[in-house]
Image (cartoon, rainbow, N blue to C red; front, side):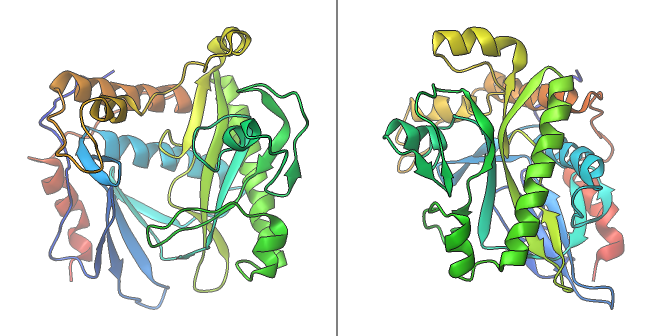
Length: 324
């Protein structure tokens, strides 16, 4: 694993020479003018880490890790689902087709797990057996494998609202997707998840659940967008820990991306109070966890790009051909 230089971070990528900026929680994006081949978007993954609807800190190499891990998965699933990617001019940057994100969030779950209000485990423990258009049997235990993977779609809350559980009938009758679009998206999602679980198993991992983003391009084609099978969009367990943890009724060991989140929540009201300074050793530990996830999931060594005086200078240089 490479040595972690805590000063080598990309906290933001605000580049005045690029047009039509849009700054998200962790990505800084720019929409390029249509030159005849369709609209394109530059997506720059910063090293910001967010929780509680705010930015907590920056984690060295996080943006490169997630961009390159998603790239690995996009390339290893392109036969299942076409995706938005056009090129990678920099390790932190994707140039992709601009898509209109579909208003349904597609979550595929293989296990009775989760902590949010819309997770299957939360609902199941409340006595719910019919959810998301599926009927689950009685007698399932926490973190048990479901009879087969299921899609648990929710409405996509674009304006800060809460996601709401949906099923196929509500999606189609409500006009969120046509029947043909739902059939295509659901088939691709289950096939992507099966590929992900198969590859994860070869790495000694269990892909528990994941989120997919699909969008429509200018021609109305459905494309896989955003990211795929990264620790930020997926839950992974270490397979070797599963049997013992399941027998004990505890959570299997995982890539815990919530270390910083838990540390902050123990020390303040993270929705209202100032965020305390996060220790350097915790930032380094989190960076190492992201790198470990990359190397375990892809089976490849992570090679940080330390070219350029700073990460931002390198990104600016690599994106110069797109300056207006």
